[in-house]
Image 1 (tube, rainbow, N blue to C red):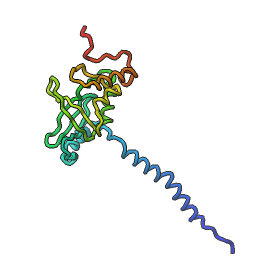
Image 2 (cartoon, rainbow, N blue to C red):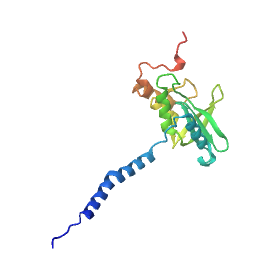
Image 3 (cartoon, rainbow, N blue to C red):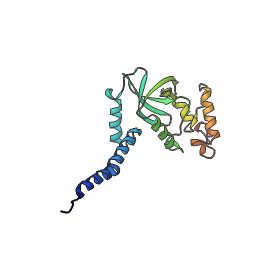
Image 4 (spheres, rainbow, N blue to C red):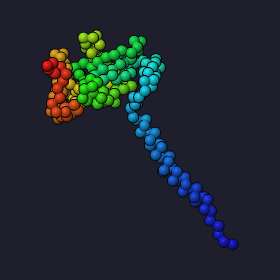
Length: 197
């Protein structure tokens, strides 16, 4: 009697091996990588409003004293934060002046700040208020000075304020010397140095 070889069993093992390497393993890798990414900013107005409502809800905020949650990044130097019991408040980064909408590098500056701190829990130290009453703050995320990070990577200029610490001046100078960020442009001029002719 001739020997019968089961092709079905061999085919099943090969099929499972192919399925694992071609489908299951890549899907698991994509799920792992997507879990590590920062949340993307919603594109539509309704989606942004929903994200802001979720971020400002009580359940979305850890009740650690002295911390704030970044709800929205407005520009490279201003953002909305939520503190326990106080609701959403707009703050501006002290000693940092980022390009505004319509200026060169404005979107890039805002995007860099968004990627760094959007949705994160931060600590804030208020050091004053601007002319319109918005708090000027030093922002710390995981013990990193975000104000200093923006200046040292060339995503903003240092304001010409006498209250700014020496490391901020040094960080801006170092970014300018290595043509980082907005210093890549030919002769970038901060807005307070523009002539009104």
